[in-house]
Length: 247
Image (cartoon, rainbow, N blue to C red; front, side):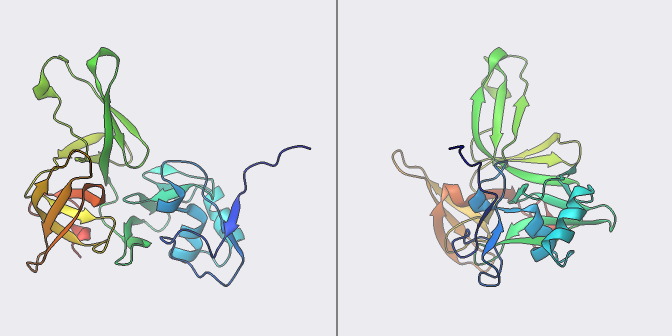
């Protein structure tokens, strides 16, 4: 008996909690394809167009809009309605000259916010490796890998990037244009836990060998709280590099 291919749909009720969609209207929902974001942390493009932005009345209309190449993600036309869209991705509609950034609401659900900064994107460095020639490969949270070329691999000062830092990518050229270090005094966007969606300043980093680092943060109102390093996305120094995050 021939084996069946991967399922393209999943039931709505057990869909990831970060998906902001009605659960009991229909039985099934489109399943995102494997890609730059995990299923738990992304929405398929079809749901973005139909359910979040409301630019289509049904799935057929949404698919048609996407197939026509009218939706850009990070400056690239995406014609597969199952393409996964995740945190900090920029969704652009050239016909209406609108851009939206993928963020998280206070309940940790994926949401889109209209932005005037559709030409840049923030990415978190999840990991880094040294490749042939001593150059550095940065593995970013959105699945992309970026090569940083160094003139001399023996000079540690040329390697300024560390896991947990953030980089700014230009859109649509996809070039690395800036770097923000993970350190005390920086502003952070919280991506998980009780304070998801909040912006706060790092006041202390408690490094631990066998467990995730504990980060103490302070909100603009003076409230202090703690979270783990995994839930931190560095967004700037005194102010966010993306002003729309403050609005």
